[in-house]
Image (cartoon, rainbow, N blue to C red; front, side, top):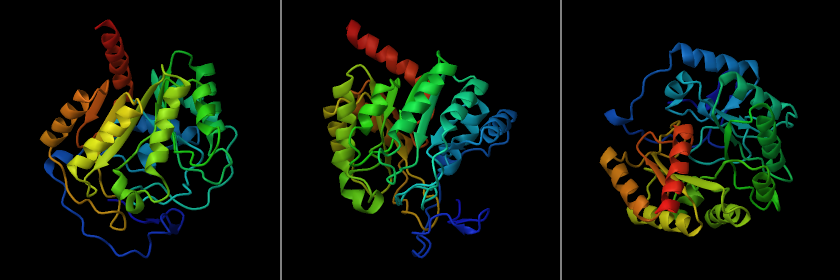
Length: 317
């Protein structure tokens, strides 16, 4: 578990949570444990990320799969800086007033993509409610920079909701990513406590809008479980996502970053994740990844290949 204070800067990482009471922490079951990252591949990826002055959601969000992914030289780059303008109760990304955008960041991401030899790249970001377009143009620039330097690399974006930013979604779609991902994160009844800066139906509408602009673009969304949701609520989210034409659903276990964050209410066993996957596939998703350690960009390259194959199989049947 990480801490609320960022000791390297001497300032609270989550100032809005610093004075909250600490919550109890459930002991992690055996199926949720992962190995510490110590491989040569991990070190090599770390060096490339640092050389290019980049941020990754792998580090900033404390992803449990960082050792596995970085060993294979897979990293999810986080653009628009490292400071989020929102304060979601589940997230470990630093919150506060962000600095100015780095105009060279798209080029640096493209350079790192080339150095890592990535066949598939995932680009995400912090929320930037302070920007007129929410950072949409920066996403578009990053996509174009990767295309220019690595034309064979497929690109997946995991965007914020661009709440009330007119034309933002259209700008990102126009840059032609291969996969457009936006996570609903949780069920509607928990939004006020878990994701207070967002609106459930605005996020759902974003995903629907992507399909309206380009019906051929793959769309993807993810939810966490263990936050206190009911099973029937998860099934309703599945129905809502299918109504919006979403192709790919990820379901993973929520892990509490610090005692100041939203507590884990329950650890779901692996068989429940399998059951949710079975239901989701029956509802019509092309792809479903559902397991305790599933995260939005975990095995993203392999999943993209399976996603394309599933679409072709559907067309042939």
